[in-house]
Structures are given as C-alpha cells and as structure tokens.
Length: 108
Image (cartoon, rainbow, N blue to C red; front, side, top):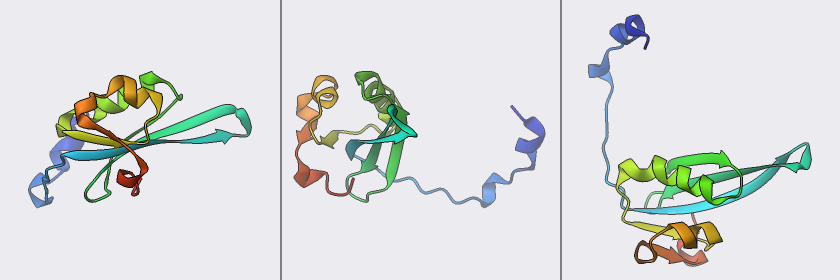
C-alpha cells in the first residue's frame, strides 16, 4: 500500500453516489489478435435498467470465465440475469434468476 499517497488524497471532496442494481444483462463477444487461433473473449455485464457497465472479464469461452464474472458481480447482490442462453449461462445461473432471450438483452 502506498501510504504517503493515500494521505494526500482528500476523500471528503469526492462525491459518491450509491445506486441499487437488481438486474443485469450479460453477454460475451469474440475477437482475435493477429490470428484466429489467438482468440479473445470479452465477457461483460451491464445494469439492465441503465445500461451502465458493471463488470467485465477477458477470458476463454469457457465456464470458468462466467464464474469469474459472477465473482465480480457478487457485491451487487443481483437478483436476476438476462442472457442469450449460451451453455455456460444455463449451467451456472439459477434458472429462477435467469431469463433467456434477445428481447431483454438489447442494450448489451
């Protein structure tokens, strides 16, 4: 920890806005670097109501990536997820908290 730097920061002048987020849209997007063998996947989650980015992960197209994204989202206490229905979502999200379909994932 950089204690001298922390002591210089005036936290009282920084506004903080806390908002409740209950639902998120999640999706993954594919790209590559120089060669299609070097695939990169961007997994992202946005606030379903506002479209604001909540978290993202750059990882392989595997279940472990969704596990990592869910860990980043845990502090939000999300109650519902909207996805395109890719297998990892079906395997790792509680079906009672999960809606599949394009009609609810238009922002992402």
